[in-house]
Length: 191
Image (cartoon, rainbow, N blue to C red; front, top):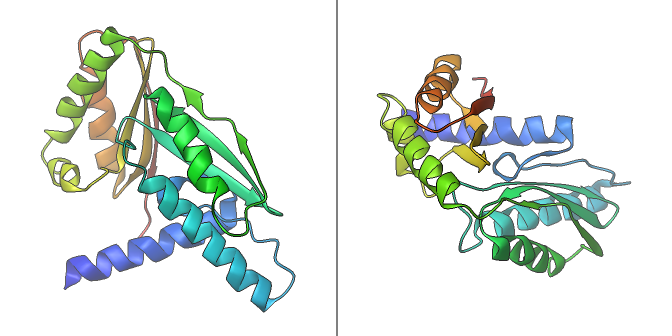
C-alpha cells in the first residue's frame, strides 16, 4: 500500500512540476497551460495526457531514447534524442493524430548509428541497473534513468528518488570502459 501511495504521489508531483516548467521529459507530463477558461483547460489537459501516452507507448521507445515536448496553441514541438531513426518519424506521426494538435514541429535528434555507441549503451545500462538500490528501477517497462550515448559521450536523463541514486548512476556510468564523458542531467524527485 505504501508503494502505491508513493507512486501516486510521484505522479502528482511530476504533473505539478510539468505545469510549472513548460518543457519536460515525456515521463514528467509537460504542460504549459494557455487555456482561457475551465472547459478549455480540461481539453488542454486531455490533449497533453494523450500526447504523452502516445509518445511513451511507441513500440521502440526505450531507455536509450529521451523524448520531451511542448504544447502551445495547437502546436506541438518535439525535442530529445533517439537511437533508432524510425522513432523520430513515428513520434511525429502519432502526435499529429491527437485531437487538438494542429501542427507538429519535430526537433528530435537522431543519434549516430554506431556499434561503439551501442556497446557503451548496453555496458552503461548494466553498470547502472546492477547497482544496489537502482536494480529495482530496471523492472519498469521503461526505466526512469535514460542513457543517451553520442560518439562515446553519455548523458543521463530522467528522474530518480534521491540524490544518492543520481550519484550512484553517475559513478557507474563513469566506470564504463570506452566512455569519454558523462553528463548527469538526472533530477531528484521531491517527496
